[in-house]
Image (cartoon, rainbow over all chains, first blue to last red; front, side):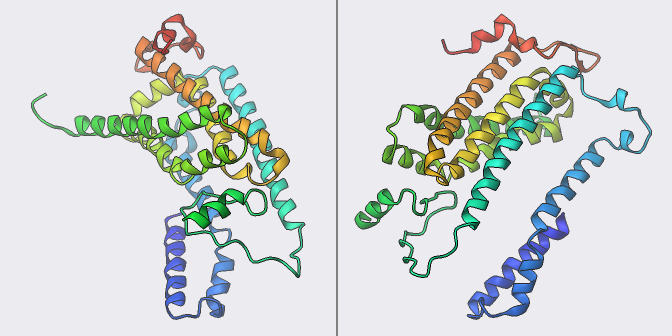
Amino acid sequence: MVGLALAMLGLGLWSLLARLRGKLFDWDWLHRAAVLMGPAGFVAVIAGWVTTEVGRQPFTIYGLMRTADSHSPLAAPAVAASLVAFILVYFAVFGAGTYYLLRLMSKPPEPEEKEPVRVPPRATGVTPAAGVTSTSWRRSERHG
Amino acid sequence: MGSLDLTLIWAGIIGFAVMAYVVLDGFDLGIGILFATLAVGDERDRAMNSIAPVWDGNETWLVMGGGGLLAVFPLAYAIILPATYPLIIAMLLGLIFRGVAFEFRWRHPRHRPLWDFAFSLGSLVAAFTQGVTLGAILQGIRVENNAYAGGWLDWLSPACWQAWPW
């Protein structure tokens, strides 16, 4: 996980270097590395998760202690209910996310596509919602 | 209490993290709760975008509070979390719905009322369960042999209700 984090940082620095040199869009090896690093985030998350689980209950994992002696003092119905709740919520949220992704991908680019409205630089997380609600953004741009 | 040892310093750090969380996320949970009363359209979009760049940073203080408790006071962590388990789970589920609403509400005009509702309800559930958790901790937690000794619904006792503001 730490190695992957360093690799991600390295890729970021590499692309910064490429941008400074003005060849961000035509440095083939950078592009290959970026594609290769695509799943790195997922792998890092899973690696970190395994490390946490093994690290926080090593005596159980390595057979020195029984699971019955190491579990939290939680009633089975509480654990079952939370598991079911998480499964339902994850299916709902991931289902919706997958649907929106597929919907986005099924729309081919139009040849006469309009230039996107230029919005002033903003922090991450603020979504101007392309094509859904841009009136307020256009207005604020004109005033700002 | 004369010397300033690591225990005290860490208690201060965790206390600060939780306080910072209450103040900062209180602001954007409050917007989430009021969201249901705002006019559909421009007003809601503005309310959402006013917290979109900061809400996740604000919530990270809670991760620091919880993570600090796990790392520095594992015994307290192992007692408090089982005692408030259903509350913490409900809070996390509320935060999940509230968090995805920031992105999903823009993706489909017909689904937007649904995600707006999820945003508001998620914020309400998160704030509500945090209040009940505070009540449960103030009421006291049954501990025997350094472990939580109560049931999973102990927090439902009437004393917890006293921490509610009404």
